[in-house]
Amino acid sequence: MRKFIGLMLALTLTFTLLQPLQSFAEEKSSSELVRSAKTAILMEKNSGMTLYEKDANKKLPPASMTKVMTLLLIMEALEKENLKLDEMVRISEHAASMGGSQIFLEAGEEMAVKDLLKGVAVASGNDASVALAERIAGTEKAFVDQMNEKAKSLGLKNTHFENPTGLPADGHYSTAHDMAVMARELLLHDAITEYTKIYDDYLRKGQENEFWLVNTNKLIKTYPGMDGLKTGFTSEAKYCLTASAKREDMHMIAVVMGAETPKDRNADVTSLLDYGFGQYEGVKLHSKDDTLKTIKITRGTPGDVKLSPEKDVVILKKKSQKEDQYETELKIANSKELPMDKGTHMGWVIIKNKEGEVAKVRLETSGKVDKAGFFELWQRSWRNLTSGQKF
Image (tube, rainbow, N blue to C red; front, side, top):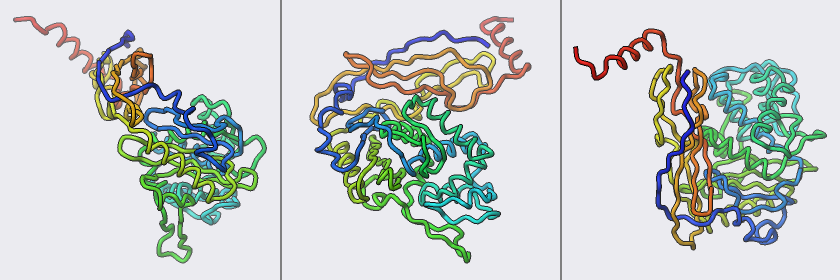
């Protein structure tokens, strides 16, 4: 297969922008924004920029916030079509035996994936989490191995999982920073918020064992733009929350760990989000649906492949700061082996200002690329030979 030489394409754009946000996290002291939580972070999803942090790399038990990673692997399995929403899953004795938060599954019962997913995302069901873990990986242990591999692939050095639920276990820990990175990755799957923003719903509607789901994140009902993600509590972890809220071109992720009460936890998260939305605004440079480059894959079908950003390319600016000029560069990687799935990594969208790089987003294939058959390759070769010739 023909390889494409890496190249840089500069598209000069002028936008209302400012200094890189690396320094923004230093502008507020910990006591001003976060009063109860032991650790916290505020990150903007699209830009990936950290706006505030308090001991964000301190290892602590994440409790049920663990399910952010569980949900991420579930969404990946659905995207790869290794799992289907309407598929029925038979509940094992092991899954049904889970204590803590649960949706009261019974051994031998069958439930659709979409309802189990709702049970995890809304009610934080430990039984639903293990049932889906067993369906995806065969065993809970194999699924936990996948969780740790995913954490490693995301560059998370201060996270280790022992289960998919967050139930207390030695060696089960994470950090506010790592939880924010996991949440950011989960939010790339747009469909997840259709579940995490549900405030209440029912399972087994109309049956004798009907079950009322109520979201463990009460801010879903009270905070404007809140669309997830996951609460957590154990006596050791105290009250935790990985929260996300979206307004216009900004999608904020706030994580707090170790708050003393649910009220304290919600107050800290609200304070962080109010600060982010109040002080900053987002400028969208490119939509995730934009075609930024079209490349040719000689032996692929289609032969012309469109490349788009993995997500919206957004830069944050302080509302009080002046305009600046930014440049977009496309760095195209060597082409991959065929076939290629939709979303295959093909390079980077890099945003720079006069001081250097301020944002970097993956550049991906907008569709699937298969190997071209012999007849199609022959036709292409013939067209190339005869183009421009007269007979």
